[in-house]
Image (cartoon, rainbow, N blue to C red; front, side, top):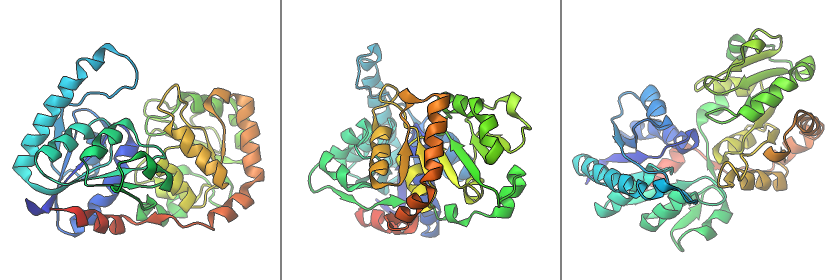
Amino acid sequence: MNNNTIVLTGGGTAGHVSLNEAIIPELIKKKYDIHYIGSYNGIEKTIIGDKFPNIPYHPISNGKLRRYFSIKNFSDPFKVLYGTMQAITVLKKVKPSVVFSKGGFVSVPVVLAAKLSNIPVVIHESDLTPGLANKIASSFAEHIFTVFEETIKHLPANKASSIGAILRPDLFHGDEKIAEQLTGFDASKETIIVMGGSQGSAKINEVIKQNIEQLTKRFQVIHLCGKGNKDELLVGKPNYIAFEYVTNELPHLMKISNYVISRAGSNSIFEFLELKKPMLLIPLSVHASRGDQVLNAKYFEKKGFASILEEEDLTATTFMDSFNRLVDEKEEMIDRMFEVNASKTPEQFVDLLLTYQK
């Protein structure tokens, strides 16, 4: 094993890549040789390739893990098997001292390969209940770190610990002047940022469009609408600006935002909590996901950090009603947010992670 080499994996959504993205600079500072194993065309390839072009990216085959019947359930295990063989080849070549997995379908063959290669695996689970990929992979892991204390009961005994959210330091270095340059807005005016996840949300985009006149009368609106989803009819509208996708711009946009309308991915909502941004969460429904976002959102609502509007109940009217209630509850929500501090820096997490290397 090479004590200065680490393999990272995780993908399928930005949430399965963002932590890897955050810890890479810390690993570089510690002079680690970093390799990334991901899928051929997943979002992880774009994010890692664009931000860290010098990190070797090793694409492998992976099958989708489904909780429902599909004819592909018979062929996808062979894709996982092939991906495992590909991952073994990579691991034999680079000889890492540890493999870190953030989850997603592509992580399963990598974790299996590491176990077969006698390389320790560390996993991070962000959601209240583990995803299917992490649930399978946890049996082969040395340790599983969780964000929520409640998650531990769903994982193998004595192999999991809760460490809170791991937040990128750059999020706290937003600059109002840069935000004004990016948006053309006035940082002193109340601003809403709307986020539909890395792919955008057609339903959220639609209710924003339906209520745009009412919203922009009082607020400036920053709309992260997803790639290919920009509505040309709204381009140039006063107090409104749309971005298909942002990366380095996000800290600046968050700096001038007073309210957040968002899905309920764990990484994002803990960032909003730490930034003290009142949030209206519209989680992916159980019909479109395994229901993790609904659980995350309900947990935050129970703690008093967020308001929820279920996707099944989302209409132009219910959206405005829910948002107006959020505005009314803003001060109390921010007060509750200041009472908690449940996060770690990427640097602190890397130190924990590296205690498991071989």
